[in-house]
Amino acid sequence: MGELKLMKGNEALAEAMIRAGCDAYFGYPITPQSEVLEYLAREAKARTGMVVFQAESEVASINMIYGAAGCGRRVMTSSSSPGMSLMQEGISYIAGAELPCLLANVVRGGPGLGTIQPSQADYFQAVKGGGHGDYKLIVLAPSTVQEMVDFVKLGFELAEKYRNPAMILTDGAVGQMMEPVELFDQMPRKTEFPEWATIGKKPGKDRNYITSLHIQPEKMEEINLRLQAKYKKMEEEEVRYVTMDTDDADYIFTGFGLGARICMKAMQIAREKGFKVGLIRPITLYPFPTKIYHEIAPKVKGILDVEMNAGQMVEDVRLSVNGKTPVEFYGRMGGVIPSPEEIFEHFIKTFIEGGK
Amino acid sequence: MSDKTLIDMEAEIAESQKRENICLEENLIYRKPEDTLIDTPMHYCPGCGHSTAHKIFMEVISEMGIQEETIGVAPVGCSVFAYHYMNVDMQEAAHGRACAVGTAIKRIMPEKYVFTYQGDGDLAAIGTAETVHAANRGENILVIFINNGIYGMTSGQMAPTSLPGMVTTTTPFGRDVSIQGYPLRISDMLASLPGVAYITRQSVHKPNNVKRTKKAMQKALEYQKKGLGFCLVEIVSNCPSNLKVTPLQANQFVEDKMIPFYPLGDIKTPEGK
Image 1 (cartoon, chains in turn yellow, purple):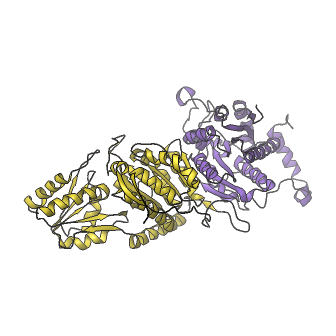
Image 2: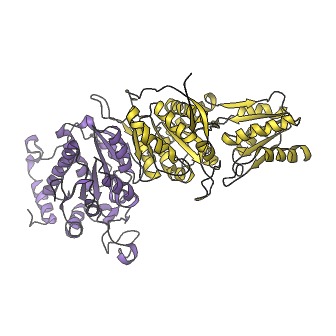
């Protein structure tokens, strides 16, 4: 068993980064995730020698990620909603140049400067692309501080396996809450780098160059087809989700991250009152666990999707269910966290009293 | 040579080309560095300063024997394809972000030589923040800055360095400084920052200037090796296609109009100028 510690979500994320043998972090302070950079600034250099760098902006930090990832290094940045919006151009370039890296968005309420309170309103941005062009991020949604730790390791592994940016999509509450976590052992930093890395031309070999520019349309289409084939492979091989009590369920609650965690409590209330409710919690928001919804939908009377936004993942749930069962939505916005009781009440109102 | 105009030189060259022996190996005065400059047609317009700047910089890399220790960053702009010509490992940065990309590469591998190659729009408009902060941190990188006072790749719009009164496609009646602001002498601005080791302004419109520019590039890389800080070589250049003139007339524009506004010479040296 690994080392046990009581840790804040953001600090656990930073600790996991050090332990995963991360080579460099470039970031810019923004609430509610500034602890990541602060923790790394205190801890990282002496322990692993990793580069920890406060950039002049999120625009600069994401392009620093591009540069360091292009050198074949294990690199990460984190930010919160407005900062992540600034990074979108850079993320598109990283996806286009097929560079592996890990990003974390500790989401706060928007739009605009919004609020510093937790939210899940950046689902579309994370899952549907965010920047320009046809690209996808691998998106992982932790619901506990433990998963903040585990998904750093998993995120790096998936990013490197597919040469694709991966994102941990979490929120201000998971970032700020303290929970006991089991930490994995320190991993060594890489000493060998991929063939494509720009680390100096090797004698007798062609130079390497990192680019997302292909001016000939036929070549650009070829690159796009290769990217799409890669995403298809991810959809076949990397879907991750959790189900609870779905075997006898008449109804399903679903949500991601903190939303799913609150649903678990609401589900417990429902079960105590005699309603057979199960839960589906996607872990990978991209690739989305379409199949499990599709399989369960004909067996249940309805699905209640709960999110801390105006209804974003619910679109993917509806596409997966494809009309096989009613899908209702309940959400709170702008930094308000729904309570298990209000979720249960909404369930009663829409599915039981509403007669659906 | 200094009292001859470029038009005179053109006549001289035309005369010399009549001599039959000009192509003899022993008479060649122009050679490409075979190891560092890739032997392929460049996409640059005839007479463009980029090709000269590429060539002499790759000569420096070749002569210093640092091809395998050098990583470059290409910009967005006319030199977006610099990595097709420069035979060193390179990264193509987003518009304006070359100094951020270069910062990361150098921080990851401080023992390597890192350079960015950027135009005026990339470095002094959209990428001003990245340029200023990299300079101010004293990032130990070399920036080669091509200032031709116009946006070449997008066909002739106003640049941050376009001269007052200069006609461009977005200033069809000439750049009016009361509306579009003043041309940015960014090299002079950066020279005030303590992190900056070396800033010089050169040109490639005449043979002597080409030699001086090459020397400045070499000096900057030697400073980088010593870890002295941020170095920038500005090259005042031309754009025949968008000025809609011949290459020689474009070089005459550099001489008559650009250089009086952007005077050549060292702006800051580690020795203390």
